[in-house]
Image 1 (tube, rainbow, N blue to C red):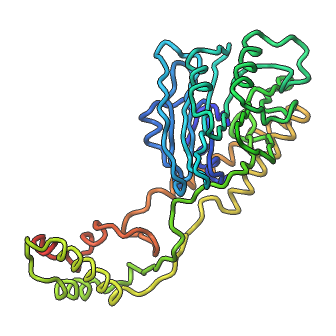
Image 2: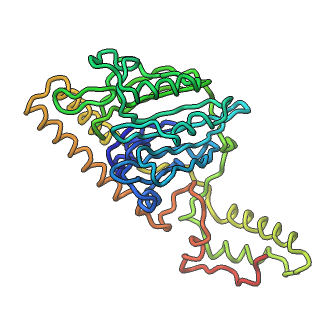
Image 3: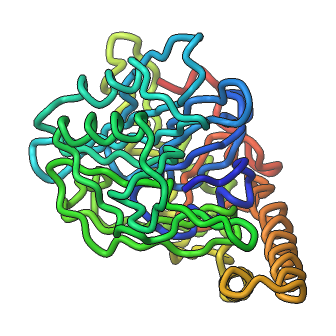
Length: 368
């Protein structure tokens, strides 16, 4: 989706959709700004903005094995931006996901040709982007003749074996009373794609494109059950004494044995003195209140686009502002938790041990 400037609120809204992969255009962010964003359960691969506007990104769930595929774009080529990620599938092949943005007026540059032609020919490919091009292939209502650039772009994609996923004539961009177009395109290769849809979103004038890929992703996180402990109810003084009593004398010749003994003592101590807890997700960021606010903002915008009237435009602006105000407030109260507020089931950090006032860590020479 083209978000017209990626903000923490917009990023949280996109992640709340629960997709395995998310392609974003026009982030308008530098690499430093992108790095400072909280991406939750996702890994973010991004290319920072070049010149006015621009900037693209791909989000992939952390439970999926993924990596970035380097693609060098010359500094003088400011007409488009591309970021490419590789995601593991169940099969022995990997899915290539590319997010692209072409600044108007669009140009088919050598960098874009290299993207289409140089990726592994046998790998499933998903190319999503805002290409700012008009052609009867995806805009059957187009009255004027397609430009030479659009014809060149279409020929390049079809020659590379790409298939257009868009439903022809389905609007993907709407602004004001008359501006309607299908400039956001989804291309695929060696993939079966279904349930493609374009829906109005309060995030920008571009619609949110969603679809289903009929290739199973390979979950990289083991599904074995975990045990959770209530760290806040742990008897830390007894824990430290028990840990000290179990640690053998240090022997530099038996470091491996000492390391195993320390691990065994640690596990035994917290099982004895830390009561078993339950996994609690805590308050959800995207609760029913936020879902309802998003629905109201989306419906209000859809009504305005159906019949642009001053009162409907005012309602659209009001409900959108209310939604983002609520979301920004929720984000401020979500990511500022102290480590002392660790929930049962969350990773236990060493800082949590050392932060206890009534119990200190054993002296350093006792660690192996």
